[in-house]
Image (cartoon, rainbow, N blue to C red; front, side):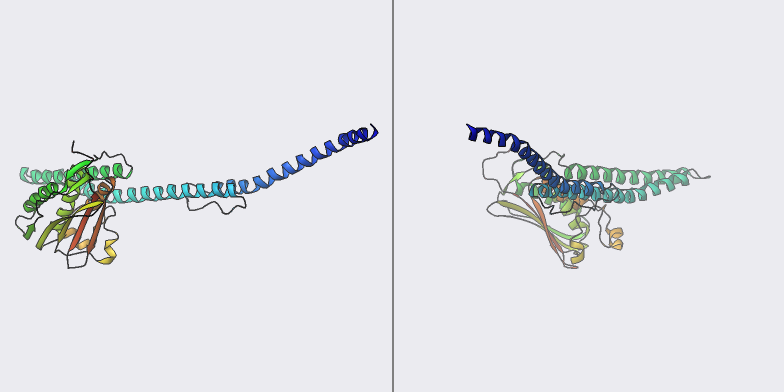
Length: 313
């Protein structure tokens, strides 16, 4: 009994001490956890809208906090990329829209001048109409790109014969090349079944064909199709002015038109290839290009191949 009493008395004395020790250890553990967490908070506080380049320091010394910091940094990378894309888009669009608007204003001011004949005013109004049409098309193209990049553009997913689409584009290309020293040749009639959107695919190939005709003063434009185990493709090959290696990596950028003098000579808004790339990727495909200056270009649209389980709606 005496021994039990002594144990009980010792327990009464030790339990508060153990509780205090446990509480102290818990506080220390929480404090150790909060130190790197506070560091993450401090790093995030330094990230401002006008400068998104700062990142949260890693590693933090604790695995869970490091994983959190890494996730935050990944989110910041995406936000910064979107922000830079928006800034670039706004700057490019502002620059491109300023030119036609300046021309329109100049024409209007000229019309408002004194002693303008009816024929002169009619000619000026026709010029204004052309600028309005070009600006409207540019706005429509920008809307397609914006919706496509944000995955808000409707795209069908069905089986269709890529060969049929290529033949349609070939016929239109003959019309586009009328009056130029260009020979247009097409593909055989063998079906090539793809999965995607036939109308969007036609739009892509028309953009590629239009560029081929525009940048081929004389020569040929040739269409071809191929297929592999999982993909099918349609290519547009020309013998035109070609693209230099330093330009190849930029041609899908919005408003990029390469050499300024050539841009003025051949026209175009610099949005066609951007739209083509967006529409290809929305269908699960891609566009490949090979080219060399003064040796022509070859653009190839790849799309998923049909396995026979989808049918045309």
